Length: 68
Image (cartoon, rainbow, N blue to C red):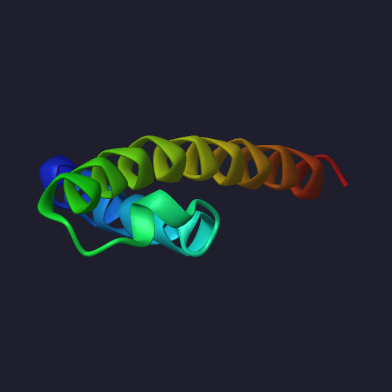
């Protein structure tokens, strides 16, 4: 079950990174294979940062909601 949740999280993280990085750096938008590989790697890392932020936000909101 944990592996399935991790895979879902990673797919969502790459998608979130893709939404953040699209049209930000012109070099990544070129259709060359190297550019697309670099874009995927950048989207992976940026998406994981975005995902970590949202996870911390969710935990804080849950704690605040339970404390009320």
